[in-house]
Image (cartoon, rainbow, N blue to C red; front, side):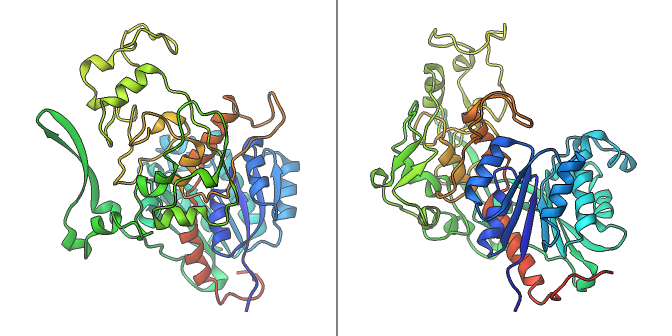
Length: 434
């Protein structure tokens, strides 16, 4: 019998991957990130781990990381790779200065030589020819067997569609192949379909080729007790009482609606009397008017022509773009959640989605629920004011939304951790060389 697998999380952000691995009974040893605000969140939620703040490209920071992670079993992380979306020449992948953080991930894995690693990134790199080169780089000249999989979080009980590619490597000395991580495949069978009835646009969840997939995903999706597929309402329906402009970032759990789904009960597990991250951004009159003319599941493209003007009620807001029309005229603007379907992919801004029943944006807590962070997980910022190394401008509130939006959903990370744990259940007691 071996002790818990020890994990080091590089580019950890707020700690989505670490939370998933912790739920899979792994021992989180180290988190490291350049963003001091994300680091503050990580330190708050992972007191059992060391949190190292700094730029991994600096020799002194890298040395501290290597010392702290010397004996870990698994290295995980999602290094930002800004040039991946523009890669056309494989030989330039590691040479592009914008991919220096990716090079550091490879370097640290090579130095530590853990029994396993997992690297996460955007799925688009598979489409531009980078995946094969990354597989070669991460194999470290044959020291690791490496596989790549594109996974959608909604297939793993997360109430949000979010595709990411995961590179999983196992040390060749283990003599086993990397695990294949399997989810429900519901995202391939279900969609939110637009319909027009009597001139009114409506959206509803629909299922295609149910027989091919071996049963009705739609029935499972609408089942409040089924945690494998979760809708937006099943995720945040007990938080309806939150109001736009609410500046109080803490709520008494006694004032909340009772949990009405298995997912809500799961998210509330271990929570005390206080629920944090509950403040909600203000909403201007023009936005309320637009949302009131959009059914759940709709977006900017479903607005009547008259509501696409920049200013409707006469109240000026934001910088004038000179056109008299909204600057955001694409699918991602004014998106309303659908209560009977999972959320769209959340980005780093509060207005990336709007509530399905209320004319407002979401709180950070609701963002976190849609991302599968449990309610006990609190998002914060470094209390120091002003410019700090790695701090992104925008203020504390924006930082908290960004921390959620940039994270790997914990339930997705847990599925990977569970699959890895099974593969490593009979690993040698100590790491060996090839």
